Amino acid sequence: MAGIKGKVGVFLEERVTYRLAKVSDIPDILEIERISFPTPWTEEAFYNEIVHNQFAYYLIIEVDFKPVGYCGVWVVIDEAHITNIAILPEYRGQGLGEAILAQALRLAKRYGARKLSLEVRVSNSVAQSLYRKLGFQEGGIRKNYYSDNGEDALVMWVKI
Image (cartoon, rainbow, N blue to C red; front, side, top):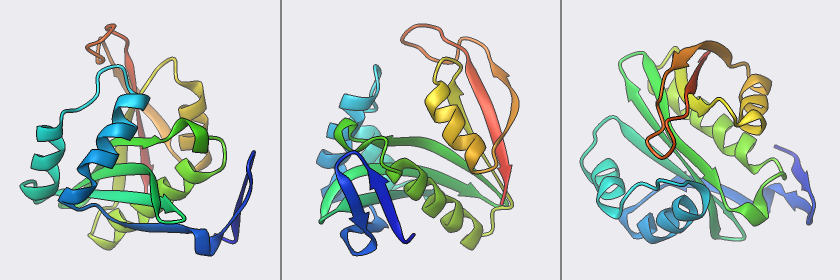
C-alpha cells in the first residue's frame, strides 16, 4: 500500500497501521459500531468474540495510532467469514475500508482459508462495489436477514 488518497489528503503508509484487537479496544470498536450500524453489536458480543471465540480475529486499522475502523473475520478450517467491517464516517472514501479488508483476506489465507464470504445489505451499493473490486462475486440472497428493517442480505464470496 503505497498511499491512500482521500478527501483529507494522502495517508502515507507510515501513518496507517493494522493490528489484532485487544479487550482494551472494545470501547473504540463500540464507538465505530454504534455510528455505523442501526443495530450495533453489544460490548458483551465483542468481548466474547475477542476473548472466547477461537475462530475469530478482529483487526483494527489506525491512522496516526487512532483506531478508525475494524474488521472481524472467522476462520474455520478452510473457510472464512467477515462478521462485520466498519470505518468511522470521517475516514470513509479514502481507501481504508479496502485496505483493512485486504488485510483480513491475507489473515484468512495465512490461517488456511481458501474462500471467504460475507453478507451485505442489498441496498448498500457502495460496499458491494468495494467487495466486487476485491474479487467478490454474488452467491445468493438471505431473505429478511437484517432485524432492524427486514432487509435482504446479498451473500458474496471470494476465493483467496
